[in-house]
Amino acid sequence: MPDPLMKIGQLAKRAKVSHRTIHYYENIGLIAPVRREGGVASTLRGGGL
Image 1 (cartoon, rainbow, N blue to C red):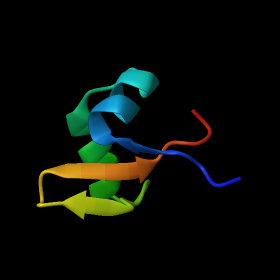
Image 2 (cartoon, one colour; image 1 turned 90 degrees about the vertical axis):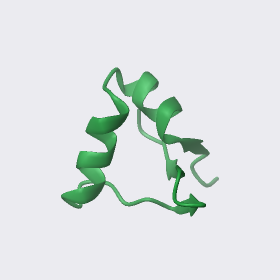
Image 3 (cartoon, rainbow, N blue to C red; image 1 turned 60 degrees about the horizontal axis):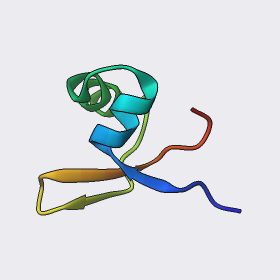
């Protein structure tokens, strides 16, 4: 079964970090965004948290 998709804010809340931390992780390649909607919201695979 594939991992559910979630928005950055949802992932940040679940991981107990800020959304800026999630963006930082994207920038350094630690996590990869799945989809961006209008350059505003990212949807990421959130499995494993």
